[in-house]
Image (tube, rainbow, N blue to C red):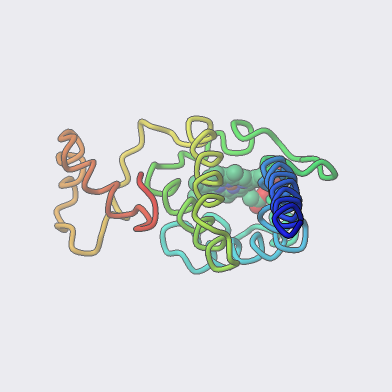
Length: 187
Ligand code: HEM
């Protein structure tokens, strides 16, 4: 009799566990991150990070913070699976066309986004998913013909054309890129 009850309890626990696993597997990235409240907090921190980041802060010097935050919230929400938010801005190519954005700037923005997510409690699995989304729009944002001369690391040589020469070597370029990648993810 006791054994039967024990088995019934075990089966009930198994059913509850598998049901809750199925529900969590269906949750969107947006929900797992924490929905609108958390997404807006993250976006606010992304703005703060950009404003302090020497690599990109000048890009946003003339921007209206409320406008940019709203657009970035919308795109963040829509891209992570929000069903009740739609993006009302320009597509990524149109929004960044003519800005001549370099790989280094793109990596700096990615770092700012991931740092804002991490400081708001987003876990590694979700960070990886955010990174994959950001990486998917890279080709629409970066002008791959650009070689950033002036914003390489502070220990770089001061010769005016040094980096252009270095850039022809793929190993130096890889080193430069790696320098700006977050330690917590592979670039
Ligand atoms: C990493 C992926 C990126 C995403 C998802 C993204 C997203 C956006 C969005 C949604 C807008 C608003 C578009 C609109 O007005 O309709 C925007 C504008 C802008 N983005 Fe990006 N961006 C990214 C990377 C970058 C990078 C790397 C830079 C340069 C460092 C940059 C600089 C700008 C600037 C200057 C604006 C105009 C802001 C304004 O209206 O004042 N973005 N971006």
